[in-house]
Length: 415
Image (cartoon, rainbow, N blue to C red; front, side, top):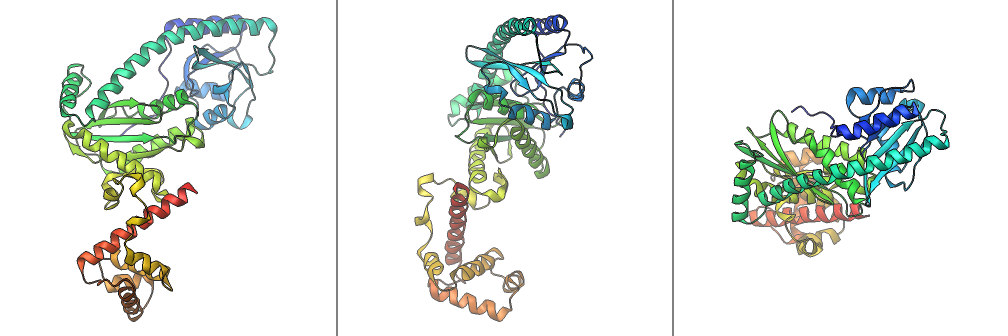
Protein backbone atom coordinates (compact mmCIF):
# COMPACT_ATOMS: atom_id res chain seq x y z
CA UNK A 1 0.00 0.00 0.00
CA UNK A 2 1.41 3.37 -1.06
CA UNK A 3 -0.26 6.42 0.45
CA UNK A 4 1.08 9.97 0.43
CA UNK A 5 0.11 12.71 2.82
CA UNK A 6 -3.04 14.08 1.31
CA UNK A 7 -2.93 17.46 -0.40
CA UNK A 8 -5.89 19.80 -0.65
CA UNK A 9 -7.82 19.87 -3.89
CA UNK A 10 -6.25 22.56 -6.15
CA UNK A 11 -8.15 25.82 -6.41
CA UNK A 12 -10.10 26.85 -9.48
CA UNK A 13 -8.61 29.11 -12.18
CA UNK A 14 -10.93 31.89 -10.94
CA UNK A 15 -9.55 31.64 -7.41
CA UNK A 16 -5.97 31.47 -8.71
CA UNK A 17 -6.54 34.69 -10.67
CA UNK A 18 -7.69 36.48 -7.51
CA UNK A 19 -4.60 35.28 -5.64
CA UNK A 20 -2.25 36.40 -8.43
CA UNK A 21 -3.94 39.80 -8.71
CA UNK A 22 -3.58 40.48 -4.98
CA UNK A 23 0.06 39.33 -4.91
CA UNK A 24 1.00 41.63 -7.81
CA UNK A 25 -0.75 44.58 -6.17
CA UNK A 26 1.03 44.01 -2.85
CA UNK A 27 4.36 42.83 -4.19
CA UNK A 28 4.22 40.05 -1.61
CA UNK A 29 3.88 36.27 -1.69
CA UNK A 30 0.25 35.23 -1.21
CA UNK A 31 -1.38 31.84 -0.70
CA UNK A 32 -4.82 30.44 0.07
CA UNK A 33 -4.92 27.36 2.29
CA UNK A 34 -7.86 25.18 3.24
CA UNK A 35 -9.04 25.12 6.90
CA UNK A 36 -6.46 22.41 7.59
CA UNK A 37 -3.59 24.64 6.37
CA UNK A 38 -3.10 22.68 3.15
CA UNK A 39 -2.23 24.78 0.11
CA UNK A 40 -5.05 25.47 -2.37
CA UNK A 41 -3.57 28.31 -4.46
CA UNK A 42 -0.33 30.27 -4.34
CA UNK A 43 1.22 33.22 -6.13
CA UNK A 44 4.74 33.56 -7.48
CA UNK A 45 7.56 34.55 -5.13
CA UNK A 46 8.52 38.15 -4.42
CA UNK A 47 11.85 37.53 -2.72
CA UNK A 48 10.10 36.81 0.58
CA UNK A 49 9.85 33.04 0.26
CA UNK A 50 10.85 30.99 3.31
CA UNK A 51 11.65 27.26 3.72
CA UNK A 52 8.02 26.49 4.65
CA UNK A 53 6.72 28.11 1.47
CA UNK A 54 9.30 26.37 -0.71
CA UNK A 55 8.64 23.00 0.94
CA UNK A 56 4.89 23.47 0.56
CA UNK A 57 5.26 24.13 -3.16
CA UNK A 58 7.33 20.96 -3.55
CA UNK A 59 5.18 18.70 -1.36
CA UNK A 60 1.73 20.23 -1.85
CA UNK A 61 1.33 20.87 1.87
CA UNK A 62 3.38 22.05 4.81
CA UNK A 63 4.94 19.52 7.15
CA UNK A 64 2.89 18.36 10.12
CA UNK A 65 4.86 20.41 12.67
CA UNK A 66 4.10 23.63 10.78
CA UNK A 67 0.42 22.73 10.40
CA UNK A 68 0.16 22.03 14.13
CA UNK A 69 1.83 25.35 14.95
CA UNK A 70 -0.46 27.41 12.72
CA UNK A 71 -3.62 25.66 13.94
CA UNK A 72 -2.47 26.11 17.54
CA UNK A 73 -2.68 29.89 17.02
CA UNK A 74 -6.45 29.44 16.76
CA UNK A 75 -6.66 30.89 13.25
CA UNK A 76 -9.67 28.76 12.32
CA UNK A 77 -11.66 30.49 15.08
CA UNK A 78 -10.47 34.05 14.37
CA UNK A 79 -13.26 36.50 13.58
CA UNK A 80 -10.87 39.00 11.97
CA UNK A 81 -7.48 39.14 10.30
CA UNK A 82 -4.26 39.13 12.27
CA UNK A 83 -0.59 38.19 12.30
CA UNK A 84 1.02 34.93 13.33
CA UNK A 85 4.61 35.02 14.48
CA UNK A 86 7.38 33.38 12.53
CA UNK A 87 9.31 30.39 13.82
CA UNK A 88 12.99 30.10 12.95
CA UNK A 89 13.08 26.42 13.91
CA UNK A 90 10.29 25.71 11.41
CA UNK A 91 11.65 28.00 8.72
CA UNK A 92 8.50 30.13 8.89
CA UNK A 93 8.33 33.92 8.39
CA UNK A 94 5.46 35.96 9.93
CA UNK A 95 2.22 35.91 8.01
CA UNK A 96 -0.88 38.05 7.87
CA UNK A 97 -3.82 35.65 8.02
CA UNK A 98 -7.40 36.36 6.96
CA UNK A 99 -10.08 33.73 7.70
CA UNK A 100 -12.17 33.33 4.54
CA UNK A 101 -15.78 32.96 5.66
CA UNK A 102 -19.09 33.02 3.89
CA UNK A 103 -22.48 32.52 5.60
CA UNK A 104 -20.81 31.13 8.70
CA UNK A 105 -18.63 28.63 6.85
CA UNK A 106 -14.84 28.77 7.20
CA UNK A 107 -13.72 28.07 3.65
CA UNK A 108 -10.01 28.71 3.91
CA UNK A 109 -7.20 30.96 5.10
CA UNK A 110 -5.68 33.78 3.07
CA UNK A 111 -2.00 34.09 4.00
CA UNK A 112 0.32 36.95 3.06
CA UNK A 113 4.04 36.74 3.88
CA UNK A 114 4.93 39.88 5.85
CA UNK A 115 8.45 39.54 7.34
CA UNK A 116 8.25 42.94 9.05
CA UNK A 117 4.82 42.21 10.63
CA UNK A 118 3.43 45.57 9.50
CA UNK A 119 1.07 46.56 6.70
CA UNK A 120 -0.02 49.95 5.40
CA UNK A 121 -3.66 51.02 5.35
CA UNK A 122 -3.93 50.66 1.57
CA UNK A 123 -2.50 47.14 1.79
CA UNK A 124 -4.96 46.00 4.47
CA UNK A 125 -7.88 47.44 2.46
CA UNK A 126 -6.70 45.64 -0.70
CA UNK A 127 -6.37 42.38 1.23
CA UNK A 128 -9.86 42.78 2.74
CA UNK A 129 -11.46 43.38 -0.69
CA UNK A 130 -9.63 40.42 -2.20
CA UNK A 131 -10.61 38.22 0.76
CA UNK A 132 -14.29 38.99 0.23
CA UNK A 133 -14.04 38.05 -3.45
CA UNK A 134 -12.14 34.86 -2.65
CA UNK A 135 -14.65 33.81 0.00
CA UNK A 136 -17.53 34.30 -2.43
CA UNK A 137 -15.76 32.29 -5.12
CA UNK A 138 -14.88 29.48 -2.72
CA UNK A 139 -18.41 29.32 -1.33
CA UNK A 140 -19.86 28.49 -4.75
CA UNK A 141 -17.26 25.76 -5.22
CA UNK A 142 -17.89 24.54 -1.67
CA UNK A 143 -21.63 24.04 -2.34
CA UNK A 144 -20.91 21.92 -5.41
CA UNK A 145 -18.33 19.81 -3.54
CA UNK A 146 -20.71 19.31 -0.61
CA UNK A 147 -23.35 17.92 -2.97
CA UNK A 148 -20.90 15.34 -4.32
CA UNK A 149 -19.82 14.36 -0.81
CA UNK A 150 -23.44 14.01 0.29
CA UNK A 151 -24.20 11.69 -2.65
CA UNK A 152 -21.20 9.50 -1.80
CA UNK A 153 -22.10 9.48 1.90
CA UNK A 154 -25.65 8.36 1.14
CA UNK A 155 -24.33 5.56 -1.07
CA UNK A 156 -21.92 4.28 1.58
CA UNK A 157 -24.52 4.37 4.35
CA UNK A 158 -26.95 2.47 2.14
CA UNK A 159 -24.30 -0.18 1.38
CA UNK A 160 -23.62 -0.78 5.08
CA UNK A 161 -27.24 -0.47 6.25
CA UNK A 162 -29.38 -3.28 7.58
CA UNK A 163 -32.09 -3.17 4.91
CA UNK A 164 -31.47 -5.81 2.21
CA UNK A 165 -33.47 -4.06 -0.53
CA UNK A 166 -31.69 -0.74 0.09
CA UNK A 167 -28.28 -2.45 -0.07
CA UNK A 168 -29.18 -4.16 -3.34
CA UNK A 169 -30.30 -0.88 -4.92
CA UNK A 170 -27.17 0.89 -3.67
CA UNK A 171 -24.86 -1.76 -5.16
CA UNK A 172 -26.58 -1.46 -8.53
CA UNK A 173 -26.44 2.34 -8.39
CA UNK A 174 -22.76 2.35 -7.39
CA UNK A 175 -21.81 0.12 -10.29
CA UNK A 176 -23.83 2.20 -12.75
CA UNK A 177 -21.90 5.30 -11.61
CA UNK A 178 -18.58 3.48 -11.91
CA UNK A 179 -17.87 3.92 -8.19
CA UNK A 180 -17.81 0.21 -7.39
CA UNK A 181 -15.54 -2.25 -9.11
CA UNK A 182 -15.73 -6.02 -9.16
CA UNK A 183 -13.23 -6.59 -6.34
CA UNK A 184 -13.72 -9.79 -4.38
CA UNK A 185 -13.03 -8.54 -0.85
CA UNK A 186 -14.44 -5.77 1.30
CA UNK A 187 -13.19 -4.02 4.43
CA UNK A 188 -14.92 -1.26 6.40
CA UNK A 189 -13.12 1.08 8.77
CA UNK A 190 -14.91 3.45 11.14
CA UNK A 191 -13.32 6.56 12.65
CA UNK A 192 -15.00 8.16 15.65
CA UNK A 193 -14.27 11.45 17.38
CA UNK A 194 -15.14 12.32 20.94
CA UNK A 195 -18.53 13.94 21.43
CA UNK A 196 -16.63 16.87 22.98
CA UNK A 197 -15.40 18.03 19.55
CA UNK A 198 -16.19 21.74 19.45
CA UNK A 199 -15.93 22.81 15.80
CA UNK A 200 -18.01 20.55 13.59
CA UNK A 201 -16.89 21.85 10.19
CA UNK A 202 -13.23 21.56 11.17
CA UNK A 203 -13.83 18.00 12.34
CA UNK A 204 -15.55 17.04 9.10
CA UNK A 205 -12.71 18.55 7.07
CA UNK A 206 -10.12 16.70 9.15
CA UNK A 207 -11.93 13.36 8.79
CA UNK A 208 -12.16 13.84 5.03
CA UNK A 209 -8.47 14.76 4.76
CA UNK A 210 -7.36 11.81 6.89
CA UNK A 211 -9.33 9.27 4.82
CA UNK A 212 -9.02 10.80 1.36
CA UNK A 213 -5.65 9.18 0.71
CA UNK A 214 -7.20 5.72 1.07
CA UNK A 215 -9.96 6.31 -1.47
CA UNK A 216 -7.69 4.99 -4.20
CA UNK A 217 -4.49 3.03 -3.55
CA UNK A 218 -2.62 0.34 -5.44
CA UNK A 219 -4.53 -2.34 -3.58
CA UNK A 220 -7.90 -0.75 -2.79
CA UNK A 221 -10.75 1.30 -4.20
CA UNK A 222 -12.70 3.18 -1.58
CA UNK A 223 -15.74 5.29 -0.79
CA UNK A 224 -16.09 7.66 2.16
CA UNK A 225 -19.01 8.83 4.29
CA UNK A 226 -18.26 11.81 6.54
CA UNK A 227 -20.46 12.80 9.47
CA UNK A 228 -20.09 15.21 12.39
CA UNK A 229 -18.27 12.81 14.69
CA UNK A 230 -17.91 9.64 12.61
CA UNK A 231 -16.48 8.71 9.24
CA UNK A 232 -16.79 5.43 7.36
CA UNK A 233 -14.27 4.14 4.84
CA UNK A 234 -15.50 1.29 2.64
CA UNK A 235 -12.73 -0.37 0.65
CA UNK A 236 -12.95 -2.95 -2.12
CA UNK A 237 -9.87 -5.09 -2.60
CA UNK A 238 -8.63 -7.81 -4.92
CA UNK A 239 -7.24 -9.67 -1.91
CA UNK A 240 -7.74 -9.59 1.87
CA UNK A 241 -5.33 -7.07 3.44
CA UNK A 242 -2.68 -8.38 5.81
CA UNK A 243 -2.53 -7.30 9.47
CA UNK A 244 0.50 -5.07 8.85
CA UNK A 245 -1.23 -3.24 6.01
CA UNK A 246 -4.36 -2.61 8.08
CA UNK A 247 -2.32 -1.48 11.10
CA UNK A 248 -0.27 0.92 8.95
CA UNK A 249 -3.42 2.39 7.39
CA UNK A 250 -5.02 2.94 10.79
CA UNK A 251 -1.86 4.49 12.23
CA UNK A 252 -1.63 6.92 9.29
CA UNK A 253 -5.25 8.01 9.75
CA UNK A 254 -4.69 8.63 13.46
CA UNK A 255 -1.51 10.61 12.79
CA UNK A 256 -3.32 12.86 10.32
CA UNK A 257 -6.18 13.49 12.75
CA UNK A 258 -3.76 14.34 15.55
CA UNK A 259 -2.19 16.90 13.21
CA UNK A 260 -5.45 18.59 12.22
CA UNK A 261 -7.42 18.40 15.49
CA UNK A 262 -6.77 19.18 19.13
CA UNK A 263 -6.57 16.53 21.86
CA UNK A 264 -10.26 16.96 22.76
CA UNK A 265 -11.18 15.17 19.49
CA UNK A 266 -9.71 11.93 20.95
CA UNK A 267 -10.13 9.86 17.74
CA UNK A 268 -10.45 6.09 17.77
CA UNK A 269 -10.53 3.65 14.88
CA UNK A 270 -12.50 0.43 14.48
CA UNK A 271 -11.59 -2.02 11.74
CA UNK A 272 -14.18 -4.58 10.67
CA UNK A 273 -13.69 -8.15 9.56
CA UNK A 274 -12.39 -8.98 6.09
CA UNK A 275 -15.21 -10.40 3.97
CA UNK A 276 -15.61 -11.74 0.43
CA UNK A 277 -17.82 -9.56 -1.71
CA UNK A 278 -19.64 -6.28 -1.32
CA UNK A 279 -22.72 -8.12 -0.02
CA UNK A 280 -20.99 -8.40 3.36
CA UNK A 281 -20.00 -4.74 3.67
CA UNK A 282 -22.74 -4.25 6.24
CA UNK A 283 -21.28 -7.07 8.38
CA UNK A 284 -17.81 -5.54 8.28
CA UNK A 285 -19.35 -2.19 9.24
CA UNK A 286 -21.17 -3.60 12.28
CA UNK A 287 -17.95 -5.30 13.35
CA UNK A 288 -16.03 -2.04 12.89
CA UNK A 289 -18.44 -0.29 15.27
CA UNK A 290 -17.74 -2.95 17.91
CA UNK A 291 -13.99 -2.62 17.33
CA UNK A 292 -14.24 1.17 17.73
CA UNK A 293 -16.02 0.65 21.03
CA UNK A 294 -13.15 -1.59 22.12
CA UNK A 295 -10.65 1.10 21.12
CA UNK A 296 -12.57 3.66 23.19
CA UNK A 297 -12.77 1.40 26.26
CA UNK A 298 -9.32 -0.23 26.26
CA UNK A 299 -6.27 2.08 26.45
CA UNK A 300 -4.05 -0.93 25.74
CA UNK A 301 -5.30 -0.87 22.12
CA UNK A 302 -3.79 2.61 21.57
CA UNK A 303 -7.00 3.93 19.98
CA UNK A 304 -7.16 1.25 17.26
CA UNK A 305 -9.48 -1.75 17.54
CA UNK A 306 -9.44 -4.58 15.00
CA UNK A 307 -12.33 -7.08 14.99
CA UNK A 308 -10.01 -9.88 13.91
CA UNK A 309 -8.09 -9.66 17.19
CA UNK A 310 -10.84 -8.95 19.73
CA UNK A 311 -11.54 -12.59 20.55
CA UNK A 312 -14.24 -13.06 23.18
CA UNK A 313 -14.28 -9.29 23.80
CA UNK A 314 -16.14 -8.96 20.51
CA UNK A 315 -19.11 -10.77 22.07
CA UNK A 316 -19.09 -8.79 25.32
CA UNK A 317 -18.79 -5.44 23.55
CA UNK A 318 -22.03 -6.03 21.68
CA UNK A 319 -23.92 -5.69 24.94
CA UNK A 320 -25.67 -2.33 25.43
CA UNK A 321 -23.62 0.16 27.44
CA UNK A 322 -26.05 0.12 30.36
CA UNK A 323 -25.86 -3.68 30.54
CA UNK A 324 -22.06 -3.80 30.63
CA UNK A 325 -21.72 -3.37 34.39
CA UNK A 326 -20.54 -5.17 37.51
CA UNK A 327 -23.67 -7.30 37.66
CA UNK A 328 -22.20 -9.41 34.84
CA UNK A 329 -19.29 -10.53 37.01
CA UNK A 330 -20.17 -13.99 38.39
CA UNK A 331 -20.68 -14.18 42.14
CA UNK A 332 -17.79 -16.68 42.61
CA UNK A 333 -15.38 -14.11 41.14
CA UNK A 334 -16.72 -11.36 43.37
CA UNK A 335 -16.22 -13.67 46.35
CA UNK A 336 -12.65 -14.33 45.21
CA UNK A 337 -11.92 -10.62 44.91
CA UNK A 338 -13.12 -10.04 48.48
CA UNK A 339 -11.05 -12.88 49.95
CA UNK A 340 -7.65 -12.44 51.60
CA UNK A 341 -5.03 -12.28 48.85
CA UNK A 342 -7.81 -11.95 46.29
CA UNK A 343 -5.78 -9.91 43.79
CA UNK A 344 -2.96 -12.46 43.76
CA UNK A 345 -5.38 -15.35 43.38
CA UNK A 346 -7.27 -13.58 40.60
CA UNK A 347 -4.02 -12.96 38.69
CA UNK A 348 -3.11 -16.62 39.17
CA UNK A 349 -6.50 -17.70 37.86
CA UNK A 350 -6.22 -15.40 34.84
CA UNK A 351 -2.77 -16.75 33.97
CA UNK A 352 -3.94 -20.36 34.42
CA UNK A 353 -6.93 -19.87 32.12
CA UNK A 354 -4.98 -17.95 29.48
CA UNK A 355 -2.50 -20.85 29.32
CA UNK A 356 -5.37 -23.33 28.81
CA UNK A 357 -4.86 -24.88 32.24
CA UNK A 358 -1.21 -25.77 31.62
CA UNK A 359 0.53 -26.10 35.00
CA UNK A 360 4.12 -25.87 33.61
CA UNK A 361 3.42 -22.75 31.51
CA UNK A 362 1.44 -21.04 34.27
CA UNK A 363 4.12 -21.69 36.90
CA UNK A 364 6.83 -20.47 34.54
CA UNK A 365 4.94 -17.28 33.67
CA UNK A 366 4.20 -16.49 37.30
CA UNK A 367 7.73 -17.40 38.38
CA UNK A 368 6.58 -19.75 41.15
CA UNK A 369 7.09 -23.43 41.98
CA UNK A 370 4.44 -25.87 40.81
CA UNK A 371 3.68 -26.80 44.41
CA UNK A 372 2.82 -23.15 45.14
CA UNK A 373 0.65 -23.02 42.03
CA UNK A 374 -1.28 -26.15 43.05
CA UNK A 375 -1.84 -24.61 46.48
CA UNK A 376 -3.22 -21.39 44.96
CA UNK A 377 -5.51 -23.29 42.60
CA UNK A 378 -6.92 -25.28 45.53
CA UNK A 379 -7.57 -22.01 47.34
CA UNK A 380 -9.38 -20.62 44.26
CA UNK A 381 -11.60 -23.69 44.05
CA UNK A 382 -12.43 -23.59 47.77
CA UNK A 383 -13.29 -19.87 47.71
CA UNK A 384 -15.30 -19.90 44.46
CA UNK A 385 -16.89 -23.31 44.89
CA UNK A 386 -16.10 -24.05 41.24
CA UNK A 387 -14.16 -26.96 39.73
CA UNK A 388 -11.27 -25.84 37.48
CA UNK A 389 -11.41 -29.21 35.70
CA UNK A 390 -14.97 -28.42 34.56
CA UNK A 391 -15.04 -26.69 31.17
CA UNK A 392 -18.26 -24.80 31.89
CA UNK A 393 -16.87 -23.50 35.19
CA UNK A 394 -13.66 -22.38 33.52
CA UNK A 395 -15.64 -20.57 30.81
CA UNK A 396 -17.70 -18.77 33.47
CA UNK A 397 -14.58 -17.60 35.27
CA UNK A 398 -12.76 -16.59 32.09
CA UNK A 399 -15.66 -14.50 30.76
CA UNK A 400 -16.09 -12.94 34.20
CA UNK A 401 -12.44 -11.90 34.22
CA UNK A 402 -12.83 -10.37 30.76
CA UNK A 403 -15.85 -8.37 31.91
CA UNK A 404 -13.83 -7.13 34.87
CA UNK A 405 -11.03 -6.02 32.55
CA UNK A 406 -13.49 -4.08 30.40
CA UNK A 407 -15.02 -2.38 33.42
CA UNK A 408 -11.63 -1.53 34.95
CA UNK A 409 -10.33 -0.16 31.65
CA UNK A 410 -13.48 1.88 31.07
CA UNK A 411 -13.33 3.36 34.56
CA UNK A 412 -9.64 4.19 34.13
CA UNK A 413 -10.23 5.92 30.79
CA UNK A 414 -13.13 7.92 32.18
CA UNK A 415 -11.01 8.94 35.15
